[in-house]
Length: 525
Ligand SMILES: *[C@@H]1O[C@H](CO)[C@@H](O)[C@H](O)[C@H]1NC(C)=O
Ligand SMILES: *[C@@H]1O[C@H](CO)[C@@H](O)[C@H](O)[C@H]1NC(C)=O
Ligand SMILES: *[C@@H]1O[C@H](CO)[C@@H](O)[C@H](O)[C@H]1NC(C)=O
Image 1 (cartoon, rainbow, N blue to C red):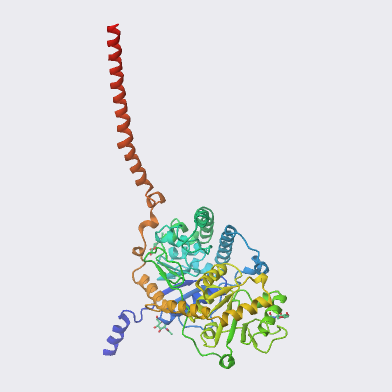
Image 2 (cartoon, helix red, strand yellow; image 1 turned 90 degrees about the vertical axis):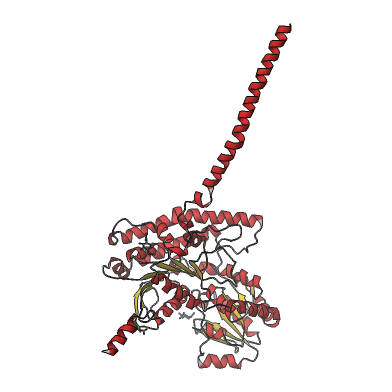
């Protein structure tokens, strides 16, 4: 009997046995996005929650409380946006880039919503969730899941801040000091930079609201219409109903910006203490007396996608180094391999960067790799290819722990010269260590912070109190245009009107005088 009571007591103890049901969605097919999101999912599972996960990558670590809805076949990005164009450096304008993101967003959203397993979830009648978590990345139609299951929504912003996140939380981004997401300016912009920033940001805001979101709404209506009672809300409205945004940004490396309590920075959340390396890698790294250069182009662009002449040129450069080289290269048949180079299809990047013999990280400048390099204090040689990589690289160079090379203009000499400069000139390592210390100095681990806030939102059934009412104000009220109008009107009424009246009275009086004078003169005559 007593045991029975103890069991009941334990069950109702707050925090213990409080497994919430969470719908976790990362519909974007690029592997790096999911690798980052999965860290959050894993932490939620570790805390005893039930997670239903919608994504493109079946887990390698099954868990009794994890139910997966794998979108398959997943959207084939390279088919629609060929990798060849990326390597041949066809730079698009910022405006074309925005269009491309919207296009990718609409296509991947539509593709995901057509998946039969996801359709089943949309049509389900007796599913219940306490929370929907969604990647904040051009999939606004998915916010309708929050409406469908009548629960709060938390988003995870993989790529850092965008103006529309501010707007959803009730702040208007100050374009005087905050450069647009696609720009690499600092918060000290010249006149022309500010002018361009304003133009681009305004274009983004207007086109997003009146071109992109209506298309998202169409998709949402097409797929949810029959399964939600009553009229569907607009995705624009749903965005303003997001309770919390966890954003991949960190105060030590990103520009300061105005914020709201509902915007939580979790940059570095994915970085864990280093684990033990596989035997072969461990001894390779331990034995390298001159240090090791680690080279990886990330998970989306494979080194094997590179034109063969570039591969040859890079190998030749590596062959001239005194250091050992680790290259994440996805094909055994690379050709003649210099004796100091080791290639592997897959590398435990975080654990490698943590090794004290790593002297340099040659990277494409993706946001997650950059953060890992910063955390472990490794200088970086960036070869940015697309998307946010250019912006990240420029930032790293500005901070003093990186140099940047242009892929299409790469030469063997260039590569050797830059690698050696970065290894032998001490300022790069010094800057890297400085930034690293700033990046690691957190009150609690960003992942613990993220999970705390996720549970907070569930405990309180959403969190309107974490955002400003500014999110719901019409623009003219937010900008106080109505007040300004009244002030001008009042000024007009109190200054202009009395002045006019006085003038009239004076004229009348003057005219009267004149008339009297004329009268007098007439009489005199
Ligand atoms: C799975 O969830 C249940 C109930 O929420 C919990 O008691 C159990 O510990 C979880 N399992 C694991 C392995 O975390
Ligand atoms: C807004 O979120 C709350 C939960 O936080 C939910 O109950 C409500 O239905 C949502 N409103 C809309 C319009 O989706
Ligand atoms: C490796 O390269 C060879 C020759 O270039 C090619 O035939 C093969 O398909 C590639 N394998 C992989 C896994 O990419």
